[in-house]
Image 1 (tube, rainbow, N blue to C red):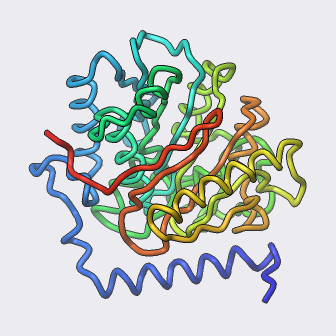
Image 2: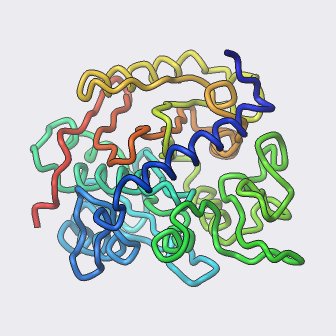
Length: 336
């Protein structure tokens, strides 16, 4: 059955929400949660407080390769972090940047767990992987693990399926903006809503939110150095490339699809898990944030990953950078 863009998003939202709600009912999600006193556990979901603590522990223990910067603050005053990892680290990036982010949609806990797991593998490199060492020598890895801290905290305290940020909207009782719809490139197009009560409300204007402004300002400062951009979402087992606003294709679509094929094959080889790949617009539904990066930063390779359909931790990542493929081993706790 063909699902056309006009109805695909509604189908996906109904299917995803229904699936997740059923899983939450069947499983005691509280058992997966971590108390702030427990410390960070790489095999379970963690509070924002524990994520913050773990990021600070990492830069204290690995100060020779890791630096933590605050990009900005949220409506409720929480910090937005960018963790940079590279050999002989200095105050500013000097090498080509691999930019990876997650958690722009609050309820997508597994995206945050995924990026934290990647951080642990890159920084601590528990298997002493020579390829990871080579990457750290050659690139500035920049991780933005929680792009929506206020919304993420709200999913722990009040509404597990909350998606937007927590900023109030003028002349509306409804709270929050879908930060993934708040970017200025093709703002207000398909896949967005002008109704503040909708989960995909785009905001009253592009870059109306403190969170998207913080990311934009950081990227604008470093855009000449960014060579690869990956953002993690959940869930659907999809590995996606631009464009998201139409069926048009970028000039290097073949290159990005070739890299996507390498990524999904690596995942299948390690886990036996099947991922679909292709442009956002035809693979899932209309959205345009990745195009903002392509237009603003002129980065040639962009991809978005919708993690596993199961309500569990995605523990494998892979991508090709200048002819090299990285994939993670089994999940594990921090060696601390």
